[in-house]
Length: 360
Image 1 (cartoon, rainbow, N blue to C red):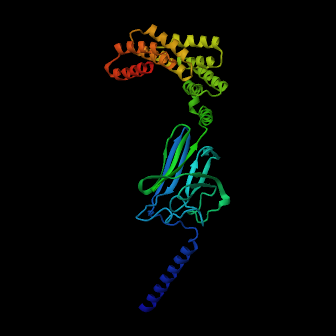
Image 2 (tube, rainbow, N blue to C red; image 1 turned 30 degrees about the vertical axis):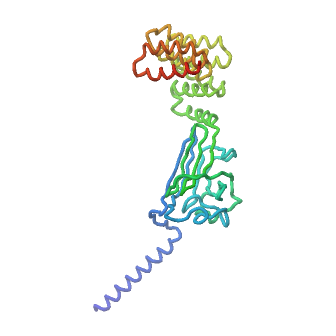
């Protein structure tokens, strides 16, 4: 009796195990592999240029005492170029259309490959960004190739991607590993991108108050963008709430458009309600808009209204300096220095030295 029951139980366990094994094999093709740490760690480097993002997704191999260039990473691209990292495709994503070393590339994600030689490198942007490494690289899928020159750099054990010389329009994108640094310039047409972004933002919560429309118009005015669009934005701001900020912005815009008589009316209304700080801000907005003479007139008004303030003389001096009238700027900076707090003295003295040196 015991042996019979033991035998049945053993057969049942064996049958159950076979069922589990069959199920595991049936799902093997769709099961996701387990995740464990890579020897070459995963990394993401990102940089905003204006309102555009550059994102590089890669893995970071180490030198680990090996000879890298011409050995671990062979010269040239036979049988395939270098994956520019380790493991999966190194990928680079541009949020907007871009120029790479002056050559156009559409927004999107690209497989990043490199073909190095001792004197020049080919940087390859592939439309295929989902492969493992470069082993299935196909030259017919290239979106762009550019030639760049590598340079010697301090030793770096782990590969890294970074960004340098960043401004609102461009950045130098580089790879640094072992004693080599190589990179390319990525350039965006930022102003039209910002204008489109502002239009989109004003359809959201930024468009619910006068401030969003005014800020958009102020940016567009400072960057000499489409005047009719700028005028529409500032008019919408004034409709929502008439105040110094949008009235003064419209006055500056109308002056830019050559409508001086109309501009004078808005300027008069704006300045009539302005405090010292606002008059000062209007003067600097005029400088940003390229109208230094207008700034001088505005700063003079502030001097008349607030002769006890050292700051009004300082601002007027700056405007005269920008116009190239050094003698007047020196006189006004001296006046500001005689009234300013101690903390301002080093800065004003430096400006006086520069102006006196330029005169002699």
